[in-house]
Image 1 (cartoon, rainbow, N blue to C red):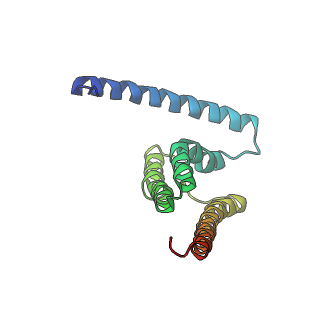
Image 2: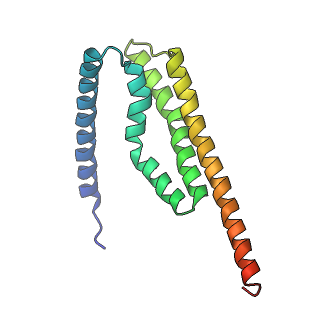
Image 3: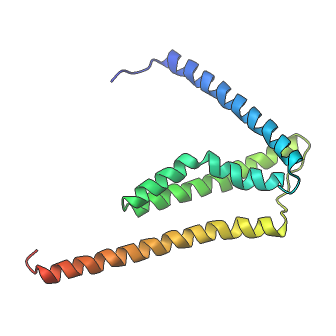
Amino acid sequence: MAKMNGVAALILLAVVTIFAYLTAEHLVSSLEGMVEANPKVSKEWITLIIIPIISNAAEHTTALIVARKGKFDLAMSVAVGSCIQIAFLVIPILILVAWGMGKPLTLLFDPMETVVCFLLPSVWCWTLILSCRFSSSRSSSSSSLLRMENPTG
């Protein structure tokens, strides 16, 4: 397997960082246009709900794939790690950056946004917990049935 030297890796990192910056700038400018065109859609809802879901699509896909393979511990680790990353790193940094720009970012949401922010992760976690619980009980009962049919196996 071919390895990349350090200089090429740094150049590639710089190019990808510039590309990520340009993509983020385009996203922000299109977001402002969308909010102006659709006043019923709040900018906070899009930035706090929709963009994190889209940006963490790879993590969500990984969690779903490993959960399908029966590796629920790994799926929960990926999901919890993603939540911790957003809760303890991204949101505080965004608040500090907003304050530095002179635009205080408060976490005071409308009642509907608060309900969605609370219920969506709760429903998702309970669905995952219950699916793990019922899938493990089905597998144990089916393996018990197989042992009854074949007592030597």
